[in-house]
Length: 125
Ligand code: FES
Image 1 (cartoon, rainbow, N blue to C red):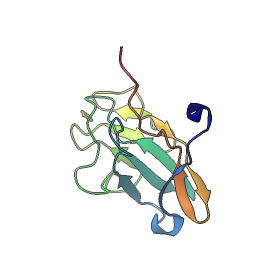
Image 2: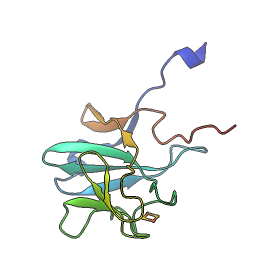
Image 3: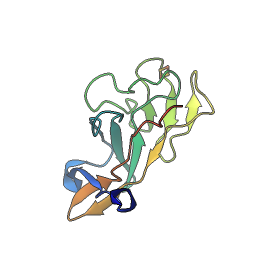
């Protein structure tokens, strides 16, 4: 019966703590989850699972460093794949044509939230 009741969204941070043109990463929600990250660009907030479609590793090279130096795109630190902020599409690099997995972001009571299942790895088998 519990499975029929949607889990509450996961609050990641205060909306005011994600400045325009910046990104922030968040750890996995628990076992079986990948981390997620948020980017605020053009007044909108975009969320993605923090897994590069090339090799399945985290994208940032150090805490919260997901963006190119000019802040116009997301870059994977491992092999420099470049992703469009607006839809996560890989524009160049070894996974060109693939895309980051988007995460829906909502704002509630001043907090940026994602669905409870955001970043959950698909069950195998
Ligand atoms: S692991 Fe991200 S580009 Fe290779």
